[in-house]
Image (tube, rainbow, N blue to C red; front, side, top):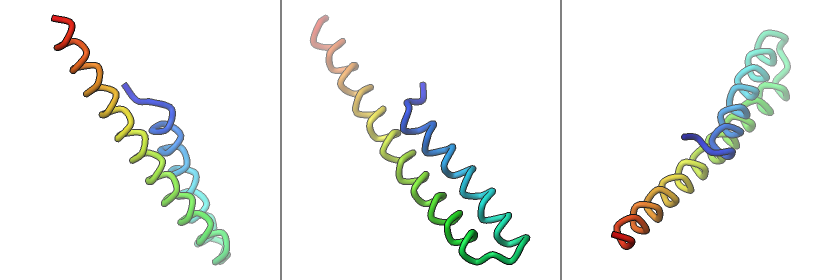
Length: 68
């Protein structure tokens, strides 16, 4: 199951792609750059979320193993 950081990160990536595409279409380099930055920020946030989820799953697995 995805966590909040993963979902928000994906959302930022999509928003960034749209901004970048619109920037290219209208010839606005600043909007393109902003879109690219949003995509990168989203990738980082998604990666952080994935790492946090995996740590949580590992802790949960250890807890189940200990309680047996």
